[in-house]
Image (tube, rainbow, N blue to C red; front, side, top):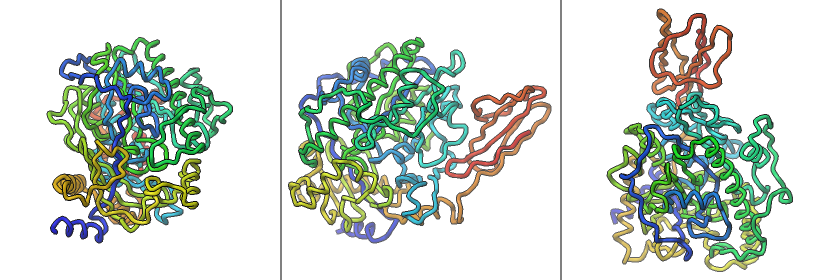
Length: 584
């Protein structure tokens, strides 16, 4: 009765709780399970290794290395053979922007105001002002922390963090950002984002390949960005359209669905080709064996009942890590890993002690956590013009979901998703009464308050065990863990977004601004401060010839200004508007 009362209070009082959907990971029969576990204590890594991130979009475990042999991916298969595969990596959300906020900050998005997709769009629908997530004052972007420790940091080219990145975040952030512009001998952290596998590739149809192909394959730096896409006729075909696809039971086995699956796998092959082009550049530069390579997706798959939900199909994404000299090659790490674990892990690999405020834990490197993760957590809130409130927690076998808006159905008429031919097919068959009972589940008018799934036998999360007395103990364990997590991160499930904005802005009517930096120059030594707590400070030294450097330096301590030079300074606390540029 105490637990039932707790749930009742959480549901009727806005801001006390919310719902998320974690879909259980499906294990295919072809999955290789004979790989041994890695031994991280035996890793030999240089003091400051290079770190290369290869990030694709909307990506479930649709790769041969993870048991799905539908499409050949020679470059990723080679990476997996020479590295460690991670089958149990989970995003904190089934969509990109909240997930990328977690990656950039090491914080759960539902605790810092980054949980709605997106915070700066669909304002005409919500009637709310555009805003940004506002993490605690001491939170810095991962890339800035690496820059402060000597790394050359580049991002090519997607940001989407739910906040405007400070000028101190990157040395380069553009379609042509590259490690090749770093200083001789300087370690780098380089992020390459691939759009081919994005949901939009199923209907628009194929990603921004004009710019990506010119950069990844041809090295062209003069091509001007255009918001154009390749047509189906222009796109290389990597797979027969007559392929026999393994269609999940919640989607109908129709020609339309098969066509979308063909597009997705074809796009995966094209993405693999682009990954290969970047890896070739790394080898050509002689940097392969001093670089730790990460490959992963920004969340799970692109199809209906995957993306935006928090079933495993929307959260689980494959990850591969290749260490220098192929250390730990051919191994598999089965531990649960969350996106919030990326920031402490990269700092750990770089030999930098992770700050205490980070909400994840390092799973390898010098500062590896003494304990493996027991649970992962995720959340779903507003997507475009429609709001829900769901929270989920999962251990190695079971997933618990709490729905804070049980009066709403699961399916929401999100306009962007309804461009998807498979979504249109589902709606048509639903209207005609031709979906089976499994496919019809998503269109239920109401949701249960609590759900529990045994992922070992129910990988698609279709059989709710919440009312089964045999699972009462597990239900209570995961429910209590959810309560603990919500309290720990300061989550407020089902809090009206207008009230969230009011909290983020401390009751003000507009977004807070970072105060202007204060510059002091005494005997040629420059000291800089900012009255805004937690503000990052960037500066550029403009020499006597008036030539500014390409990127902003991160201010950490006083420095000497060359004779005849001047300094320009800008301050920016994450979630606040940046200060004006000050020049002395």
